Length: 226
Picture 1 (cartoon, one colour):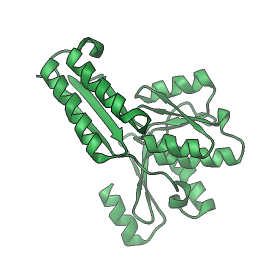
Picture 2 (cartoon, rainbow, N blue to C red; picture 1 turned 180 degrees about the vertical axis):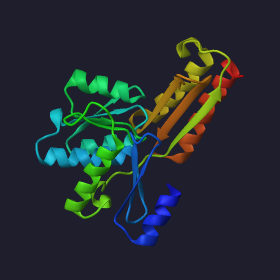
Picture 3 (cartoon, rainbow, N blue to C red; picture 1 turned 45 degrees about the horizontal axis):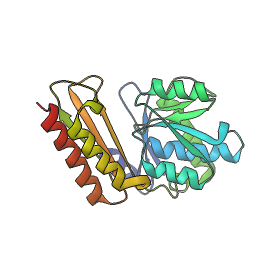
Picture 4 (cartoon, rainbow, N blue to C red; picture 1 turned 135 degrees about the vertical axis):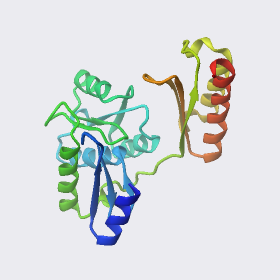
């Protein structure tokens, strides 16, 4: 993304797009150099669909990894955010179950269900380029989106028991959730492919993010760490 930022700045263009290896995900760079991830794409497209009365149930489906800032700005604009488990298949399952037509992941995997049940980075790029051509800039499409400080800590584990069965972890998690309340989130889960537990903490203040991600990660290391 750093290379793309430099290229956009050097050539003075309005939009840059990067794809992953199989092009099912797309991330963007504004003319100003700002990186826009999948959260920004969901916001931009949701606003456009809402303006045309085409956003079903005024609801967007994302995952537990999408930033709380996206949820807040959607609420401000009269829309809601539903969260599914991490993985595009879970996003699609929730969309089909609840009758929604827009969903995706922060990583840039977006599903436009009116067009296709599969994420397609090229389709995402065409959608965003079209919106930019109509509205003038990607910055204006994501106005008001402010990411809450967020950190993800990976802890190597020797086993994967139910997290509820680990008293020390449960205490650290409860303390974080009680203190943060509605102004933060904690997501604690095991990796599906590696011997890792992932701790994601999001809050208004960076100090809280660092404090609680460390306390939960330390509890995991003490309980089941390698």
